[in-house]
Image 1 (cartoon, rainbow, N blue to C red):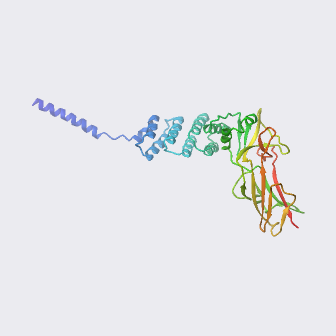
Image 2: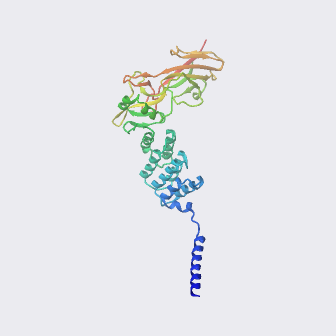
Length: 357
């Protein structure tokens, strides 16, 4: 009888143990993983989890106040590297997070730099992200040059320094003159720098109608009679024909082949713009109120290589342009700057027409 009761007791204990095992609550991996950085990374790399599950883990991790901004930036990097998010989304989520926290500017700057060093996306995507960070007030405008250098060096085998590339404008670069004299034919240097700015024409072109009372925009308004140097849709430029390769041209003096130097601190610089080495700008300019119904002609002889035709409603003008070799051996255009920097003289190529009588 004693053995029987002992057996019952053992069975009861075993049953209790089994019951406890089966009655224990399931642990939801996605609700606990966000408390630990290493587990978040592990979950992102886990091939058994769905995309939706991974995104939830990432969102929870970004809301987790116990994770540092460095850890959260690294989580986004891992998510990109594992195909969970795209590169644009990496920056969108990172900037959104940085805009909500009180970490120092240096920590925010480091997080953005790490993101810029990640991936092989286009330079345009990285430059857009830098501009968004500045526009949102996450980093100061003074950090722009440093961030651009980081983005540039992330996609180039040549490692640029802040003393070589001194400024990146909307459509121009300021580079150390001695650096450019040594590298203007270096394919990798030129390729990388050309990604930083859009292409433009070598001048601003203006079409005028001249009569006794004065000189007027040919089509009646400046926007429809003037074009450049930025290459944009619309306006009177119809096409660029016979264009050679794009290159980085230096700004030459208006009246000589000498470079027009700029000075940044103690550094002597060239201003560079991305444009065509040669080509034909093909303009179609509507006739305005003052020119409607009349035949016109150029006021003076046209440049060699240019072509002009007058039609009932429009004029067609094809203008030839070509870079010249400056006296330092570097190619450029005279008056290329067009007022980008203080003190610049604005150059325009004026086409003036009169009534053909």
